[in-house]
Amino acid sequence: MIVNSLEEIKNKFFFAIIVGSGPAGLSTAIGLEKKKIECLIIEAGGVEADIKNAPYLKGKFVGDSDYYTLENSRGRQFGGTGNYWGGNCNPIQEEEFDDWPIAKADLDKHIVDSKKILNLKNDFFLEKFSDNLNLFNLDWSDVKFGEKYYDYIKKSKYINLSLNTIYRGSNGNNGKITSINCFKNKDYKLQGNYFILSCGGVENSRLLLWTKEISPQLFKYDLPIGNYYMDHPFHEVAGGIVDYKKLQIYNKKNNINKAPLITCDSTYHVSLSQNFIKKEGILNSGLYISFLKANNYSSLFKQVRCMAPNFIKEIYENKTVKDNYEIRLDILQEQQPLFNRKITLNSSLDPLGMPLPEAHWWKTELERKSAKIITEEITKIFLENNIARIGLEEHLFNDEEYETQAGFHQIGGTRMGEDFKNSVVDKNLKVHGFSNLFVNGSSVFRTASYNHPTYTIVKLALRLSNHLSRI
Image (cartoon, rainbow, N blue to C red; front, side, top):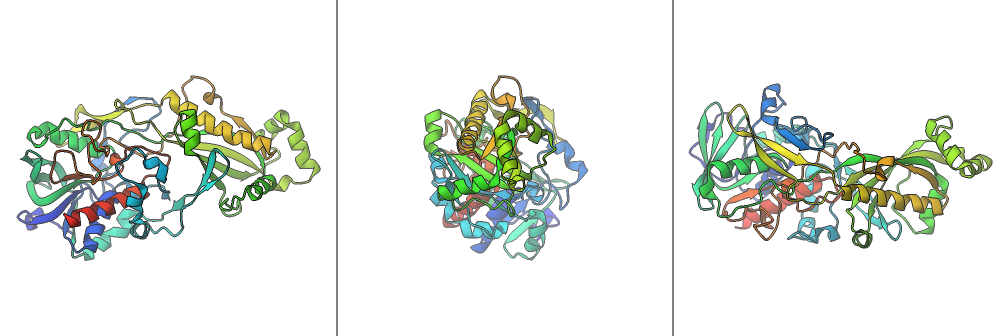
């Protein structure tokens, strides 16, 4: 049901009030609806993006100059950034939950419902490519959350949605929230049993920091809110020429069954084995090897001809030019959770007088080293098997600044854990020291892995709705 005026519900007591209507908030509401539990979603924006909301999305950035602006990386509308995300999905692997208070199996209980929400059709795999590398896949979701779920909520008996409704803080004492303050043309107080912040990686930290500032009596502990902020640096690391037939021979020889056919899927996705990560002391990465039909007159083909004349000569003598491709290697990197990489409150205010966020983010030499090692590893395999000749980008070998596109994956800030000294929420996403405040979304991720976060966000949201229905 769409709530047009808060006058209609100002005296109503909801089981749960969800702040934010992106993938995390919507999935939580859908999970509660399945159990016939009524909730209210409040969304600060409207159905469509509106330029008038731009001042609320601003913020300051401190760190590497190539990081995107906060204004251009967030959304304030029904469906949140789930209206214009890339659609890529893949799961965090079991061994990468070592530092989490939950296991992959805890989320896998919600695979079926998550795939339904995201319209995912394919299964995910992780297959050994070599002793040190794994082959993995992505599945693509065509879901734009605002488009898919607005009419759905209009017809729902259990999900209420109030648009253009801005969270302004919480009321209560000693870990118990009794109501939240909202603004929709004027100020209101809304009551509920449970309250869930589901506003994205930056905004969750901002709202929790603001709540702490104006209502310190609510907090029992000094939590590391905003700390351990991460993203996914994305950049080109290499390029070259590959003999596709020889790559197929390698796959067959090594019993690699899941390798994509280039005619159907033009990208191989490769990650590192956990044993290799531990041995080298590096971070995991997703290496994206993209195949383009070779152009004999391209500058890349000419460069490889100079660097590896025998390799190119063999291609011509065997008349296999049509089986060769130019390849580009890009990397989506895991980041180390660092305490001082963080979201804080800035002195600048939004139009309602709430502090805007300030993001402190930078790349580290460990990320450069990790990118170099995975790129060298695939290059070595290709060279030893005479599959390809690859040239690596210079920035992998020096300490010069290099640009990344980041991944627009805002992760951490309200991380999950068992100890309030280094985490903000527990394994059930409840804020430490609170009885009824929860946080949901990629901000609770303890580590970033190399995976696209939305699939995990949806599974966490469904797990949260299941937990709330039982308490």
